[in-house]
Length: 186
Image 1 (cartoon, rainbow, N blue to C red):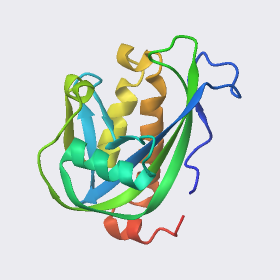
Image 2: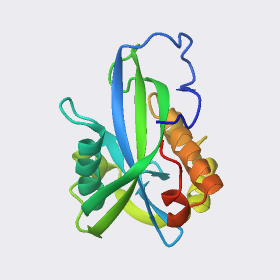
Image 3: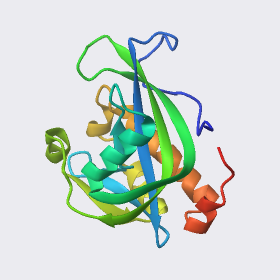
Image 4: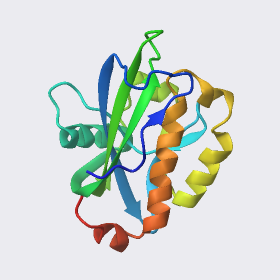
């Protein structure tokens, strides 16, 4: 799968070769009418792609089906192709002094229908809601808020950088379904 950027390193990390664990994540790119489906967080005031962590016995694909079902109520999910991946070196939220690598793989998807969300408590607390938005508007908004207090927290800073990188690729390569469909196999 193609790399969408060089490794994204959170501020304050000096040893880029050291990490305590690896977290895998799978994220969906769903396009309709030149808009992309993103998760707006009321708590963070930002836009992220739907998806999340890959559990121990899951593949990236199975994790994506589960996450899209939970976060946006997606039904009839079809992964069309791989879009790309990012790699982050982040500081842990829960274990002070520890850092981890996060590999996020992005997949272009088709969804037959949408139902109700089935959010985790943390996602409910963040006010996660699915929104169709033009990538340029999501990018402009994320750029505007990326220096605020919420995006400077340990372990959170690289999220908005990562999502903006993917949004920039979508804008550059063309958000229209026809353009995404014609991307070379990755």
